Length: 221
Image 1 (cartoon, rainbow, N blue to C red):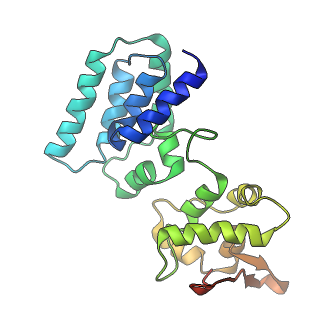
Image 2 (cartoon, helix red, strand yellow; image 1 turned 90 degrees about the vertical axis):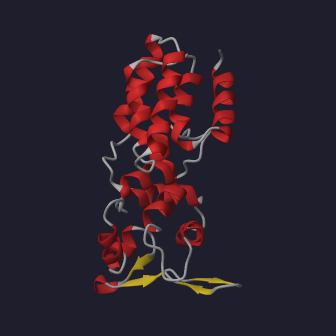
């Protein structure tokens, strides 16, 4: 199968499969008919983010049936093993599950989405996901993420927003699992500058990057 054919199958799977069984589906699509323990372990790890009880049991049963019905091939065992190396074990932690299932970075790490050029991951989306874990009051997470992209353009209008976001990702920390730290850090000048929400001023001060929306007025940093 050609790489283009594999990508086409992956795109169809991403539209049709339940998120918690998609990682296994991706492993099957890359040529294989599956693996033994690595794919089973990957599916079980993602199933930990389902509610305890029958729902989680059904998820694991579905994974087990898929693996049993598949014939393992060496390359696919390696694929599943590589995804296991990047996908965190949630261990019942809600923040880790949110990272795995609700962010582009987490989905890519767990095989639930493809990276560019075929998937959802872009530098500005990742930057928005980091910052918008703590969106400003009365702002939805989606609005917050759109504002992050607008600020990236305002910060360096002659440079494409994704290039600006790539630079900010080097200084803006990942706040997953540290919501309280996110709230405190983004209230400081240093935190706002690191994440592209403000420009540095003299003497350690900063000037928030304020954007005006016809519908919302001045957008909070």
